[in-house]
Length: 328
Image 1 (cartoon, rainbow, N blue to C red):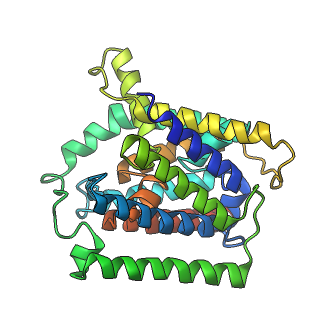
Image 2: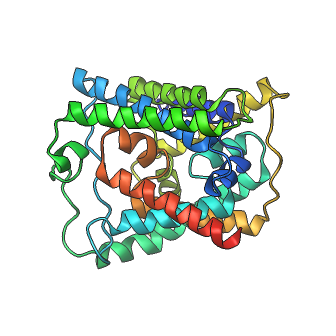
């Protein structure tokens, strides 16, 4: 179970170095004032997609695309849409996301600590109450990962090679246009593009060491499972690997914080503890309902060309931008 530690440290350090963990970055992205977050995100997703498909082709890893998340309300991907919107709303409310909040804790940000506590509470609510309720409500069986609609190439009928070319070209074009027209500012040690490449480096570390991809939100579910087991309301969980991974993230961000104490820091955003707690709860519930988060779907899922990941990411930004428009 020590294998997740090193990729976790690499991921936390990359987020901290890129400055993408800072609350101001999320605030300004959701209000379309600064494109630091999306530039880093697309760079990480594009580079990660190349790495994942190379190692899949070499046979080093054998990973299925992300299945649709179904909760039985209006379609096979209703969980991706509703969960994605809740996740985005939680990001705006707490000014963090399922990955960056661990980097915030490592960097000594109090709001990140409250968001993490909220995430743990959300994980407990999800594991003991919402998950069993939604599972009993969902009609039919979960969609098989071999379903032809799960990946971009199968859904469009275009070869994977061509889909990859189009996807990478799109990423590169959007990144270039964003850098040229908006000149996204970075308050991290490195710029947005380099930061994205560092996150892709953490993905590479995860592939090489544990043959799996980045993802953080299942840590909330794992904690929830342990809480319910501890009070005698469930069986002992079989895994705590993501908890170990996120602990590594906290340490990685702490290392960057201690090694570069004079690193640029964005203007502090004052967030009430109750707001951070509420946002953390929504982040945990939304990401588990959607079956992944900004890293699990946004970076890793897209790298596997998963349709569910694209739906979740689109819903996440829609939910985040919508809440930003309401609360300012």
